[in-house]
Image (cartoon, rainbow, N blue to C red; front, side):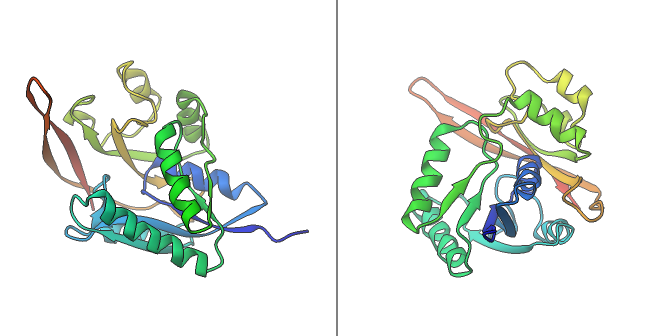
Length: 233
């Protein structure tokens, strides 16, 4: 029997990457050895999700996997991001990793973009959640015993009151029809703290809420939108 391919998984700390890790571990042809996480070098927090580095470290320790951190500046332009990403890919390849796992579900342009960059260094992508129906996917996540809390929301789609809520059946029933059940369009982000990928539940408590505003310019107007973040401690 051939040895399984060594794989790294891009980790956000949230539900999609957690479920992707679970499903990848069910595949006997893959051995996930490393998690890769992108962090903001100014704030030392996970990009997009806003989770503190020390909380990330405790979370990943419960998976038993190695962690590689990709540091990017605050609001990096695309060329800076790609330069750092290609360095990470090259390092993974040197470690004998041939496969990179992502938790993307249906964003076609994003998958094409990832596969183009992976191809530049001779790596392959693996997308275990790809094209699955998101309502069914989140219910599978809950049925497996995962627990996850809302740590970031977009004000375009949800309100500050959603911060700190557990994703459960009641939360899913209350979601507006325009919001994807997995938040695949960036409506919300989560911190996953329990489930079959962890040796023990990740203990935490919640801190302050923080609002980050964005100005979106169109031909007709300047619209303010933004994100609410909940500090996980």
